[in-house]
Amino acid sequence: MGLTLAAAEWGGEFDGALDDINALFSFPALFWQDVAGGLFAVNRTILIAWFMTLVAMTILVLATRNPQVVPGKLQSVVEMLLEFIRGLASDIIGPKGQRYVPLLTTFFVFILFMNLAKLTPFLMLPPTSRIAFPLFLAGIAWLVYVGAGIKEQGFGHYFKELAFPPGVPKALYVLLTPIELLSNLILRPLTLMLRLFANMVAGHILVVITLVAIHVFLPSMPFGWMVGVFALVAAPLVFGFELLIIGLQAYIFTMLAAVYIASSVEPAH
Amino acid sequence: MENLGNGLVFGLATLGPGIGLGILIGKAIESMARQPEAAGMIRTTMFIGIAVVEALALLGFVLAFAI
Image (cartoon, rainbow over all chains, first blue to last red; front, side):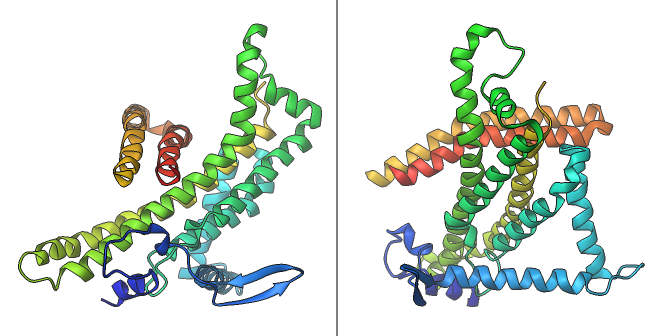
């Protein structure tokens, strides 16, 4: 019941129909400050993001502060994580991938912990379900892969390869060039952003609806409690499924960022 | 009525990608079973394919709220 209250308490009123879905995601500013003409406001989402960042930093610092030759539990988990990202980078990008390992690790850890807030008791809201977080992450990925392409292949060559992929009959360029430009420069970051955002929004709605269903239906006496019992049984399954989604989304974002960087670093001959 | 429309937009948008994902993952598992030593590469390629196919369903999800 504590979880339900944590989810329901902040998400607006649940005494009627759930008619405004935005109530689950947007929260009023807790305190704010005018900084250089702009409003610097902190609401619940930002507090959760700060808290989860703190947790991630604490875990990473504790694991690597005093490294042992024979690693302890925490150290071996973090080492496994780093090995995993390093393997990903060298598999997908190749020998030049080692340079991007810190960036990819940051993506993975940041997204994983931001998403984990979705199932953390008393937080129960993934900051990545607000568009600003995926937007900035996808923006960074975009800057890095375009920058990597310009750096590795030169400005002219990179955009020439991008717009006119070699090995295609000349007449097809009329059709191919707009598609390639649109897909490489706009659709890639857009889908990178939307994938994370949409998965987190859908997951948050699913979790909230399951918990609210328990909260609302279990005490309702004639027949409603059956729905409540169903929701009670379904809740652990939903949580397990969401845990899977959380890890998968962090992995897919990291992997796609690596794929996009690889496509800039290694030209498609 | 409007909510019904929203639901239908997302529902219809999932049909194509659903079929696509089924074929894609099924084929990937098939080839992994046939050639387990290439599983890592196949998995990577599968996720790239999933990312492309899934984009359509995601656009549907976002448009369902936008419309």
